[in-house]
Each structure stands twice: as structure tokens, then as C-alpha cells.
Image (cartoon, rainbow, N blue to C red; front, top):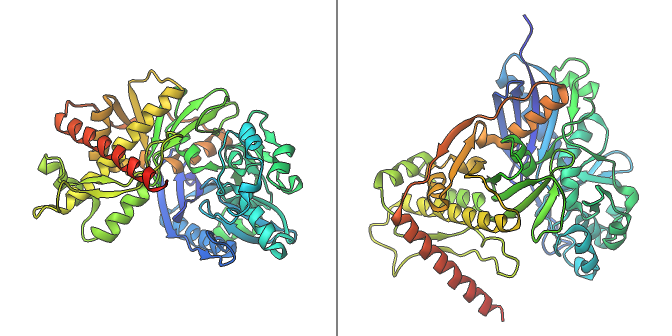
Length: 483
């Protein structure tokens, strides 16, 4: 009897590394994770880095653990996904020299010297130091002895492809945030490289997600007990993978509630827009995106620091059983994406004083409402750029495990909230679909795991109006203090 077939998927986010084993039907058989280790670089004011050799060891360790937990399965392909702006620099000797997460800003002291008017005309992106090429720029300016050793650099997920195959590419969905890619021409831009002081010759070939990069190295096949000729499939960015995982169609708005909450819509053409526009996983498809900011990570940190004695499920159950609005208002999500307005992170607000009878669950409940309201504001903004006639929103990411948040979003938007099967691990599911595509298997139909229908909730509407009022006041205060 032949063994069940499946894939090994490496997913590297901002906070942790995960390795999942998924069978060809999309069932997650095992999922192992470990927090990512970072170091502060004292040569720069605002930068962190990681040691690729440590992350490589973590990937292999988690892979062995996941394979053991999954039981009898024949791995026929390996793939990957990662945060978008992170990179790894690869040396002239083939070694992995240094890695930088998306939050590294080592080029911050130098980006203001560039011709941003022209850069923005080509990329549609505003001045910011966290884009990939500026990590290399900062290294060249202040650590030339390291830069001299570098042959090429690529995204973190494509670095994983390099580990497994020895081949270096850069997947096109992630290349848009390199600041060397011309989205209109779908190619590396020599002009952008000149404008951003990027060495054009250092850039690897572009690749399309869901294509075969090559065979996994023989020594790794032996290490993991794979058969011969296991393929490595080019993966994608976490957000694009999540949207692909819920099989988003043109005109559908998808909220990816993870560390942050990107609001996305798939387009079939590129054009100038007042927010992010990146290639999607499929050729000829593009992703329009606004972002609610630090939603998931703030919720997780608040829970870990203030409410660690309770489980998420316990807090949610108590909030639902109360049937009341919380006596506190949360404002942790960044303000919705409107270019001329300031982004503000505030905290908890009370009417006069902290109530004596304040319950722990009310703080979590307020956080969930804050996320739901911010998603709705981003939805409204996104649909002013590209209209959507769909009577529903699609949710995915771990944050949508909260029934309170999903129902509040449905109530405040007046639209159904659809959570497709696999929504909580949507990036993993998206890379699974890319593997299925590459290996020639038929894709499963999209099915809904949950649907939240809007209810007439007057108390929530009143709470939402107060939330908007206070957001406006806090933005005004923040603006005045900056004068």
C-alpha cells in the first residue's frame, strides 16, 4: 500500500518560524513552531538582524519534528513563505552572511538623500527605510567590509529555496517591496537601481510563485528521509499566500488578521493608487492593499502581559455570556489608511476612572471591537479606490478565531463575514495550493467553515460612533503636539 503524499512548508513570519506537513488534500498533519531569535546592531540607530545559520538549524530541527509528528507520509515537494521586506544576503563563497527582518531600518539615515519623487513615480511607494534594498544600502554605507563579501540578496522565503536547492531567485510578489522592481513592466529596473544605489548585477532572476525551482539537494533528502527527486516549489509572501489560500477572486475584499491586518483586493491590471499595489501570486494579477496596523501583535502582547492567566477561549466565552458592551474602549490598532491623516496608537480609554467592577474579559472584548472597527474603516477606504459589489467580506488569519470580532465586523459593516475552510492557517493553505498547482493536482473548491450574518445591534453602533469620535480627538491631539 502506497503512503499518503504531501508537502513540507516552511513559513517564516515576523515573530516565529513554522514548519507544516500538509497532505495533497489540504489536511494539516503537523505544525511545529519556534520564536525567532534576533540581535541588535549597535552600528545603526534602529536595526535588528538574524544569523541565517541559526535560522537554518531551526528550520531543519522543526522539519524533523513535524515529519515525526505527521506519521507515514511521502513528501513530494517543499515550499516556503515569509514576511515581505525581509532579506538574506548571500556571499560570494555561497554562504548566508546576514539576514534582516522587515522591521530592520538600517538604511534610515540615507534614504532621505534619494530622489523620492521619481522613485514614487515608478513604484507607487512613499519614502520609508524598511524596504529590502535599503537594508543593503545601510550595510554598504556603514559596514563596507560586510557588503564587499555579498554576491546577491533575496527574500527570506526564496533564501529557503536556496538552502534546499542551491538556486537563487526572487519571487515577483515580494520583489515589489525591494525598491528595485518596476511593477508596470514586471521586471527589475536599472533606473530604480541607480536611484536607490542598488547594484543591478546583485539581483537574482525573478520567479513566479507556484513554479518548480528545482530538486531538493540530495543531502537534504537523505537528512529528512525523502525519496528521490523531491521538488522545491517557489513560494510567496505571507499576505499574498493568505489571499491565495482563501482563493480570493477579483472584487472580493479579504482581511488577513495576523500580526497586522492587511485589507486586500485582487485586480487584473496595474495602475497608480494611493496605497500599496503589489503583484499577486498569479501572473497578470495584482493585490491592492491597505493595512490596519499592529492588530494581532498588540492583542497577543496585551493578552500575554495583562491576562496571561486566562485562555482566549475563556475570555471570549465570558464576554459573550455577559451580552453587554465593555466599560472600556481600546485604541491599539493604527488609524485606518488615509494618507493625509496621522496614524495613532493610543491604548485603553475609560469614561472617568477605571471601574471597580471592570472584568478582565472586557479588555479583550474592547480589543476585538477595535480590530473590527479598524477593518471596517480600511474596507471603506479600499472600496473608494476600487469598488466592490460583493455583499460579504472574507476573513482569514488567526485573529478571525474570535467570534466576537467576526460578528462585530458583520454587524458594523452590514455585510456577511465569510471564513473559508483553512482560514486560521490561510498562508499555509495558500502555499499548499501553490504546491498542488505545481505538481499538477486538481485544486479543491472553496468551502465556507463559518459565515457570520449581520445583526441589528444598536448598542454596538453607539459604541462604534464613540470609538470614531475618540479616534478623531486623539488624532487631533497627536497632530497639535507635533507642531
